[in-house]
Amino acid sequence: MSRRSTYKRRGVSGVYYARIYIPIDLQSHYGCEDKKVSLRTKDESEAKRQFHITMATWELKFKELRNRRELRPDDMADAVWKHYNSSIEEYEQAKNHMPTKDDVDAAKQKLLNSAQHGDFDLNDPLAVLNASVDFLATKERRTMDQKARAIKLRDMRAQLADNEAPLTGPASDDYLNRNKLLVREDDPTRHELALKIARAEIEALERTIERDRGDYGGTPKDPIVKPASGTSREQAKPGETIMELFEQYAVENPNDVRLDTLNQARRDIGTYLQVVGVNYPPRMIDKATVREWKGLLMKLPVKATESTVFKGMTLPQIVEHNEKIQKPAITTRTVNRYMSGLSAFCDWLENNGYLETNPVLKMFLKKDKRTKTRPFSTAQLNTLFRSPLFTGCQSDESWLYKKRPGNIQIRNHEFWVPLIMLFSGARPGEIAQLEIADIQSHHGIWIMDITTTLDDDDEDEDYKSVKNKNSKRVIPIHSELIKIGFLKYYNALKDSGETRLFPQAKRNSRGQMIADFSKAFGRYLEGVGVKDKSDKDFKKYKLYSLRHGAADAFRRAGYLNEQFGFILGHGNSEKNTAMTSHYGELPEGPLDMRVELINSIAYPGLNLDHLIL
Image (cartoon, rainbow, N blue to C red; front, side, top):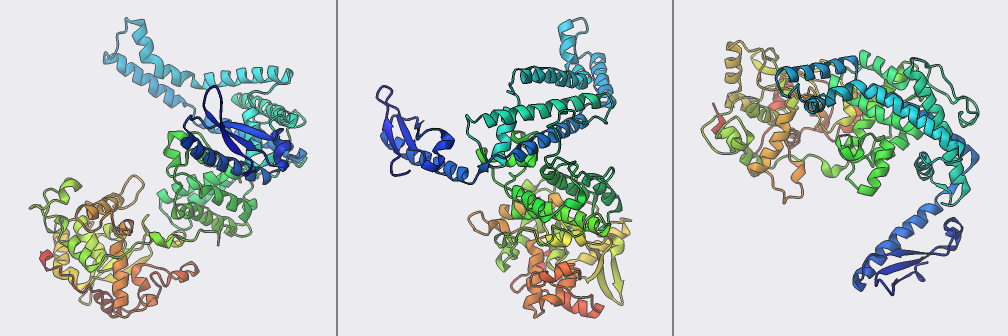
């Protein structure tokens, strides 16, 4: 094909075009031997460049067509049934977003308040109308939606009577493309499929109108609108849909995870349902459907749900649309986060007899080691701890001024959390949530009684789904922290009547402890010269680099990974035995052994004497 295809210039217009010869095996599909495609230029050099681009595009089209198969009767039946169900699902989703009575009352009250405040002239009909638009739109939205569906039903019936289906042509094309089915543009089968899908939508519209009246007992009367197999497609039992069972799982919360984590899992599992359907039986969750879902997630654009470009689209639709606009996809880590939520839920389904085995296990994507957090070098540590946040800044009100030298001494969590991470390996959220009562003295040894938690930046993703509530670990306070003045800080807080060690440490709207500080700290590192964008490892340096530095310090002192893992807060589950080389595991040892272990953390060349209070 490539040998014969060429580009030429049109005589009158002077615009170049490509003459593309269709491969013999695909000519029956196109109904011709060649295609002429305008290159939209009169410049020969540009035409040559565009010709090669056009040829590459058509080569991909030919390759994709060869991977398709012919449309079968059962495909039509499947398309009809899926369209019927998806149309009803869209109605149910839209209904959930309809204004409630409270919404209407609120809009009405807003209008009345506006009138009372004199925001518009009550004697001016046009002004009154303009001011009332939001209220009227809210009040009439449900009624207008019902009327619109009734009109659509009437029109589709009339079109079907004329053997036309203009409204479902796109749905027909979409089904053919998604399922890689081979049907020529002029093939009557394509029109037949559109007509059958129109019949499915008519049935679905009739169901929605019935449901508007509170009648949920309606079933399709059209003989072609039925499960593709000819028998009832298996549906979840009443009260046992995947999301209904998820709510039971959320109430039990067997892993005692945060509310934010449950909400995130609920949203993530919702994308799985966009692939298999909301009535998919829980017992049929299998590796095939998880694999299909994972494949789509790997193509999901970053922040797709926040983008107006993808508004109202399902996961498959978003991925398909993104093939045109090419927004960057989410990371491997984010894909694994989606799967982690489903995996934890499947564990519960298995334990409660709804599922034989958890199909998500062993399906996680391999982590990209290139994004692994790196510990700071000695030079970076010296730069960090001699920067204004630790030695004195212009103001503690804004990060803009925290990176500028000044006389304001910061001695809250922003000062202590990085230092405690450096000399304990604890996570930032674990440190920030410490209470005064968590700092104790046992036989003259000062310790921190830390509650193990996981932050978003923690790389131990597989471990997140097995954390136990109130999992405690005792960490002795490093002698360097005591030297700097940690106990003085603690005693001052205790004497003032505070109950929290870091009262200014806050959770964000998602309930994550000092998450905002963690993000700001990453930008601060760049601002004070700890890291530079020209460095290929720029993104690998963050607050968590201090935790990784502590792990390296243990290794420098001669300890094996499995000897200090418990200090870092790793458990003993089978899932985490593979993490030994990353951090490690060990049952908690005697206190004196832990003191020796903690005080082995050292950073040759790092001097913090200037921080002593």
